[in-house]
Image (tube, rainbow, N blue to C red; front, side, top):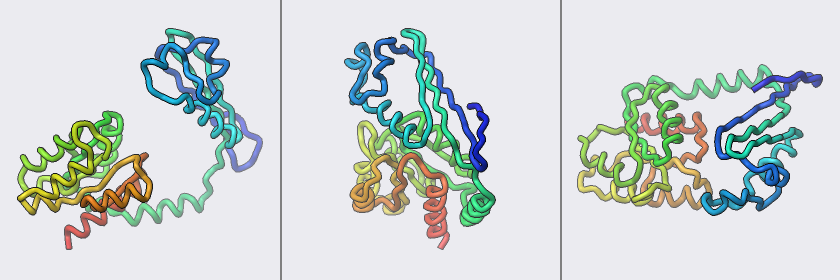
Length: 239
């Protein structure tokens, strides 16, 4: 990332370059990469997609008044360069952020144990880092079956909350929640479960509650929202 010169007061220009060492793209395809439904011919049979991703990105960048450029060498990789103008945050923004942060007392997280059910390694790593930095202990499983087994195998009280992804292999988050809620051990059956999912429509939230979940956090995770939900659950446990 590079900051470029900007003549407009209260704004800054940032150039972001993203480079990979992947399979690259042909020069022929680069001419139409931002067209809707365009796909590189040699990958379309192996990787699913609609060919809309880059077209959508280009429209967003255009709406924000920025630019996006791409260079690529077949068999060596690609470089994308996005240049955007950002409004500088004023003092009021930081005062509001301080007030919001005061609402969450991280001391309540110390010693609490989270069971994280997430099949995507990158998503799990990010969530685990965020939670552990807040003082929480985290165990991670990759599917609903592993999640249910963890609850069954460990003593009551091992986990204070389960953060449950919905779309997982072998057993999804809804089914796993139902299995836990139907356990004979009622102390384990009532462990708080929060959905962490890209399914963010109102019907998805309703379904999460209907199967017995205690909350719903949409992906990408808003850290403050997550901590507010966890704080509310831990406060209820204390009372």
